[in-house]
Structure formats: structure tokens, C-alpha cells
Amino acid sequence: MRAVVQRVRQAKVIVQGRVVGAIDRGAVILLGVKDGDSEDEVRWLAEKCVNLRIFENDQGKFHFSLLEIQGEILVVSQFTLYGDCRKGRRPSFTEAAHPTEAEDLYEKFVEALRDTGLKVETGVFAARMEVEIHNEGPVTLIVESVR
Image (cartoon, rainbow, N blue to C red):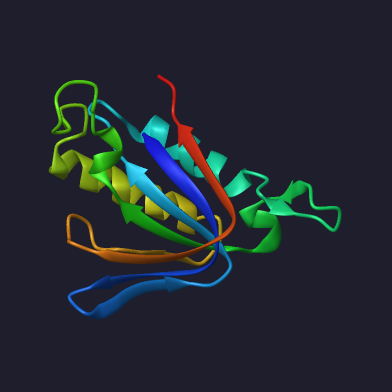
């Protein structure tokens, strides 16, 4: 699994002109599921994301996590995170999980985040979405499970 974690002041997802998920201070997590990923990756990645110390203290040092600031999370599925651009001009998505498998693990990832007690909003799996992100910093990290 691969996550792009962006610290935000606010963010929202719009599908067919309707806001389906919106958050204030916290993080947007763009989530890609790789073929062969399992619930082990789900648990590890969820734990890692909520505990990343990406929020600053009074001295400007990254010191606080989403859990510590009670930040909000917006999760957006994004199979394109597994786009392979090494050959040609069109990305190959052969490393991405099949949509049925990916949706199941995406939902389990969202549930694992919700189990922390934080507010978690989502986009709509496999929908065409507009994602509005007010990145703070900017702070953007790539977190990937290792198997």
C-alpha cells in the first residue's frame, strides 16, 4: 500500500457537484492499493499515518501527530499511485490491485482510521472526484508499506 499524506488546513471532495467529504485541520490521505496487499499492510499503514509527527510545536519542529492534535482525515482512493511511467508515455497500472480487492482493503483502511476515534471522511471509491486541498506548509509525505 502506498499513501500520500498531506497536512491540510481544510479539504473536501466533490462528486457530481456534491460535497461528499470535508475536513478541517488534519490530513488528506491519497491511498493506493497494490496487487497482493493484505490486512497486515492496512493495519501498519493506518497506524503509521495517524502517528506521523507532522504538526509543529511552538518552536516550529514537527512534534505532534494527528492523534495528538485530534486532527481530521480525508481518505481518497487513488489507483494512479501505482502508475509505472518508466516505459513509453502512457502509465501502466499493472501493479495496482483489482478494483474489487482494492475497495475491500480501502474500506478496511478507513475503518482502521475510524477505530482511532478521529473524524474520518472519504471520497467515493472509483468515482471521478474533484479534490480541493489547502495544503499547510506545504507538508507532503509518501508512506509505503514494506512486504
